[in-house]
Length: 217
Image 1 (cartoon, helix red, strand yellow):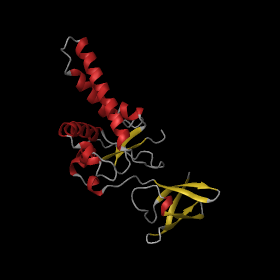
Image 2 (cartoon, helix red, strand yellow; image 1 turned 90 degrees about the vertical axis):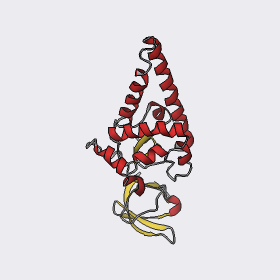
Image 3 (tube, one colour; image 1 turned 120 degrees about the vertical axis):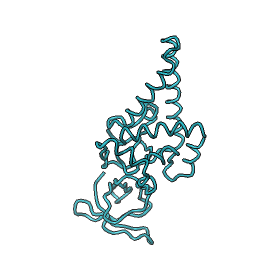
């Protein structure tokens, strides 16, 4: 894909022009792969064919103003000052709810299996230790740049990032994990996602995160 900048966009006509390496390429809104409308001077990645532009991917990340200004999410993100942009040269594709559910199911089974093994291995004494270890591991994995997700997410080709495309902090990761348990108990997590344009669950909205299809490492 070739990197370029939108130098003209007519919202009424759904047409625009992208400047890439000194050359102008016309695109239509049907070529647009983002969830938000194209923006003038926006940096994009262009898919080209002999006939011209066949796809335009935004690289700014997905900006959710409500979540981005969420004071709870901002506080936990500030706990880790090393939070940096992740793979801004890669297009962002929101993960479908079905694949998220599959990843969540895998994580739940891993959670139960590990807790069972630890419980049996310690004759029940470590039954509470298993969940703590698994939760800590999940939180650290989601905030690790080379992983960016739980084991379940990785197995189904997903990853997590902030709403503006950044690696989440450990603080944000723990916040999301805690709220996710409440989402499951109250049965509101994925119900909320059904009404979200970015398939954000309740815990995503609180933590200011999105789950996307995995990008190149």
